[in-house]
Length: 320
Image 1: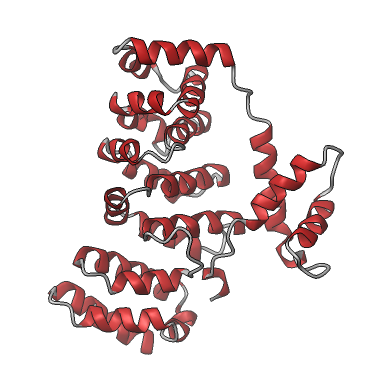
Image 2 (image 1 turned 45 degrees about the vertical axis):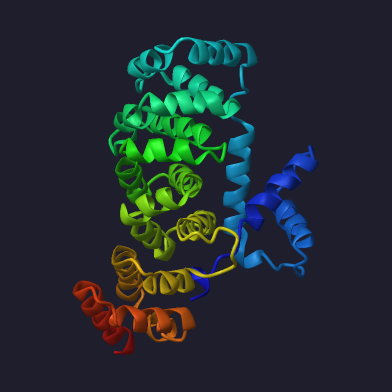
């Protein structure tokens, strides 16, 4: 069950701070020891999670090696986007998997300006990027498309997230995420799902669009790295409307099972079913989680026949 409990993003954030503070060459062991001190852990407290520390180092190094923002180019693009109503449509129409430079420039511009991000989103940014998010698309173009979407959603502007989700961007993201063949891309998708869950309406679209099931699959997948699991757990918490709560995946699913909306209950039950089928050894322990016990009891009494039957069947499975 411990893998289903959130650890926060302390390791990644701590690694980022350590590498920013110290410019000399550091080994992975140096970073791990510094993290243990920073997090108040005993000596070798992170030894069993050294692979996760290594993944955090890789993530931060990739962030630091990203192409620097070209200020003049960004300012020029920003001016065009905000003064010429057709610029956004023209740039998005011409953007393709072979023009990575344009995608990166748009990403930097969207990240630098909330107004630019809003203009791009209104110009159907989401649907324009769908071809680059298909499973068979080149990795570099998928990474650039995700970078552009991340830049557009960094401003905590719910209307931008709404525009992107209404522009049918979710299913391509989940299809790419389901592959999990490329760790970095999967992490970026999880972070993007977290950013998109910034309003009640967007959380509803993510939840009922299959994001909860997809994230649950990845969290319980033994091959998923610790860093990826943490980002997924954070996304789940945000989609459930509890981004700052220290609650586990089972607790969140239990709370959603008790929701007043049958659709939300069905998604939570389906996610619990995934855990029970993929890790049957956890069934008995899941029933010990108060939120699950209460949530299943509420779902069994639901006026929605499908929810009631599914909850009763799941309860039997967990008890078997």
